[in-house]
Amino acid sequence: MKTIKQFMAPLVVLIAASPLLAQEELKFSVQAGLGYGFDSLEKVTKERKAGSLGFSYQSSIKNTRNVYRFNLLWNSFPGSFDEAAGFETSLQSLQLSADLFFYSPGKDLNFFLGLSANNYFARYSPKVNEEGEPLKTGVAFDGTKMGIRLGLDYRCNKKWSFDATFNLTEYGVTYRSKVGGINPAWLQLSARYHF
Image (tube, rainbow, N blue to C red; front, side):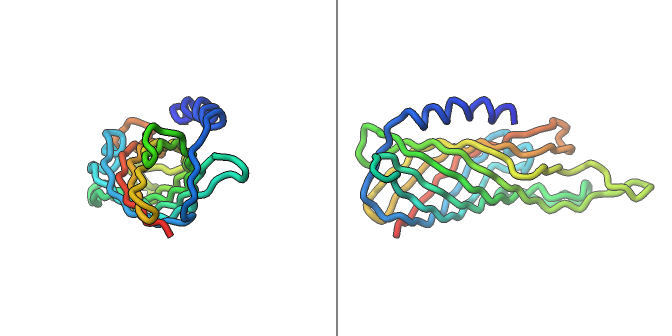
């Protein structure tokens, strides 16, 4: 949480102070993406691959040039089931995020910054000790986790765009790796169809 909070204050100030790019465009879009996890994600899943499917709404603030986008994404981070420990290293998450777009030198290439709320899911079948109490061998989740996003969006035409998004989120505590809190990060490359 401390890592995320350090990014939030300057991010909010930057978003509020910057002019944003507006275009007349279709407001809804669906997207599919592939991701590459950094070391912090691999500590949990033991893999680096990821995938996502999502739905977005994009518009501009009335009487301004400020463009915003709301996203609802399902993310999959494949791993494997650890029979000895009794937990799944694969993860899934439901991510709700809001992005704001900024001017860029190219007309069709735009920079965006955003915040996200993330709910992670994992299969967990805890082992028990001799008294029948569960052992702390898996992952402890503690509600919704916050995150930040930043990326580039390239608009090919009215219907299609592509984006590259860096995601950094809070996660939870993993007892297996004995490193305490983890902040997973991944790069996501997505194709988006606007309608």
